[in-house]
Amino acid sequence: MDAPRRTRTFARQLRGAMSLPEVILWQAIRSRKVNGLRFRRQHPFDSYVLDFYCPEFRLCLEVDGASHGLGDRPLRDDIRDARLAAQGIRTLRMSAELVLHDVDDAVRMIRGFLDLPEPLD
Image (cartoon, rainbow, N blue to C red; front, side):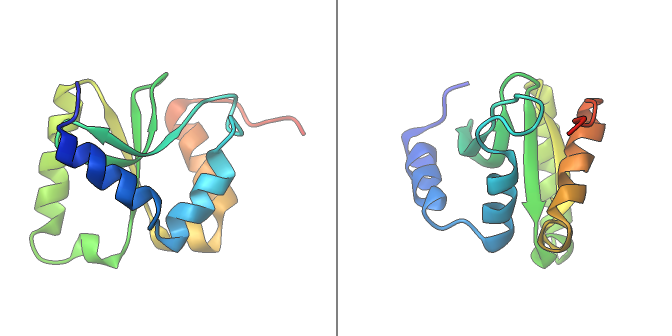
């Protein structure tokens, strides 16, 4: 689904202002570092901007800070996830704290969600 121009413009702005946890996760998953999968950052889709998107698996990765547990934010996140699911996109949410403290665990979480093997190293 093509995103409206304002969403594409906003996504472009967000790419230049990523949070520290987003930058850390981006460094860990970019350039096909996770089982050769391609991820896009701050990907516009419909009226949303997805933190990270893997088109091959139709997977949205969301890095949630503390504000995602406050007020009506959990409900808004649930509605957003349901709208994405209706379009065939699965959402994996992980806490910003997890990414900050153990990005390798965050990557393992992605692999586990997609049922991908760990690299042999």
